[in-house]
Image (spheres, rainbow, N blue to C red):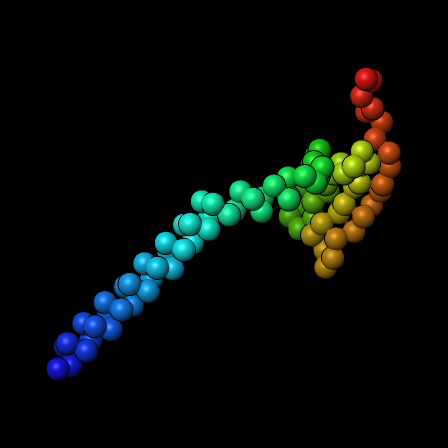
Length: 91
């Protein structure tokens, strides 16, 4: 009696885990590319990253034609500098 109940519980748990993995696979396969396009439309590029010490990094980021410099690693991110991009494309 006890072995039969335990076997049913393990079988039910296995089926539940299998369903969860199947749903995750389907979501990743079909719906994730649709949501990732929203993030790709943003024009953010990390131009350079420099490690200052073991805790702090300095990042140069370009966003919508402007360059920003951020210092990360403290209690909160700090914007050091913002300027217009000097590398304009001649078209």
